[in-house]
Length: 364
Image (cartoon, rainbow, N blue to C red; front, side):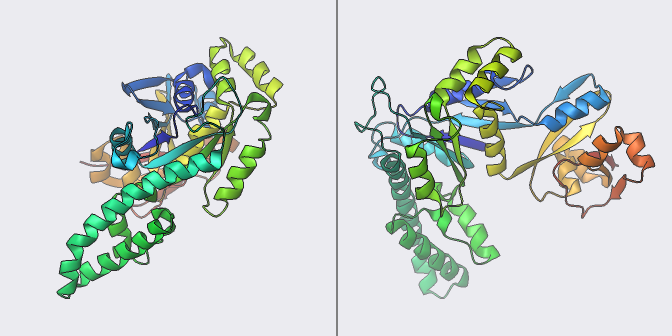
């Protein structure tokens, strides 16, 4: 599961990506590795794993991760291949969610590709290019399905009706994510279309340091514009985040943050938001060898969660032994939580809750 950072050139995308790549920005043991030149595997900041480490005192700790992709800057005409348009659209199609960076600061030394700062126009530029590409995809698909629909094929008729609804939205400059599937069949079809504008999105307003806490007029404009999208807006000073990564000690970084009026780096807030945007959640395993956060889809069952550790765990699943994170911390250990009656045995139908501390019994 990957979240792609998109935006016009010179809005701060690559600087933000580099901030996420620097372990010191979040905590002393925040690893980051590059799989490809533009993909980073970033640990998800989670104070719960620090607490479990404190209680269990394991030999090692492994945090949950999220993949962040730095995607080439987009320009007008990208849908027709202008600039790096084809590369941009190919990369974003492979992502599961979009982090849209908007420039919300004035600085005469940093050239804006369109001449002046206007995050509303910038957002619309990218939206239109993505919508045009999706419109091209939809119209090609409609051509194929219309013939089958005319013969009375029910599946083709369902698909044609959905494609026409999406097409109408795109022609009105609305993204595909505004179309809500009306049935399971439509949900499966929607997924199969792989539309760029159907992907969930969050907006990052890149501001100057003085606006990092309360935002500014540009941020207000963005919030007003996206209020009906049910999308999160994060305010972040990418320049300040870059300065934080240059500081050597945790204490220096904390002083810098306090001077800005922040409790933690904005990059940490962003990583958690991206994790949530990808509909991911965490469960833990906790033992003296290792305390580990495992990533699962929201709604995953116990066998599916076990399968993340090893496919054999899912195939031979017998039961899951579960203690909620809050109970584990309240009683201080697995043994004491058991004594207090907070230890549950769950079967194949159990839907894992965020923060569950789990053991699996299996037989292969």
